Length: 277
Image (tube, rainbow, N blue to C red):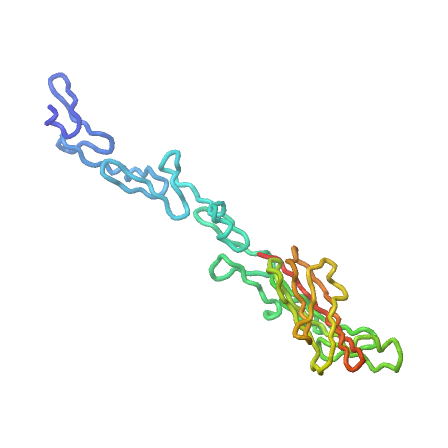
């Protein structure tokens, strides 16, 4: 009787009938078995592939097959994967079947690769709020409005320098710096240290000159140091990373001793430390 049926033969009183194993259906001759296309009944939540005697469920990109029932597609949380912290430069948001990268709410825009963040140059795009008598200085994620105000006994010489007015002989005025020059720079909190960040020196050097450099104020946290190099240059270096964003003003004094006379200049170095993305 087994030759009568392709798969299973069931004996009945005075006759028999054929049946098929799972994944097959009885052919019109009621003896042969042909593959059953289970995908026609849409058993899978997304994609179905019919195979001989069975079927296989597949998921579209961004989804994975459930370990529980093998037919349901579950969203993959790309942001929670071990590499999720490196998918986006700033923040990763999981969405159905994919993810989206975002940037800080102000000062940045999403880069063309949709993962990194690009600084918005408010000074270049003229989206800053600086007044007409201020200078816009772009930093990562923002900007600063700069202005130069000279103290008493000084006059403005250009956009960044104050020159001392002539002093009567033998007065305290002569102890003031000849000039005060303003400088500006910016770097992120993750800048590696130690690193030289600023150089200063006299406009001309005469044989026998002696120079001395000192940070007068602004270094209460001990992040910076100044040293003399090449005999006539001063170098300010970052000694250790600044742990959080802040604006710092270093006042750096340069004294030049020439033929028994000492002249002093002052550099006011604005340092804008920005957040690391």
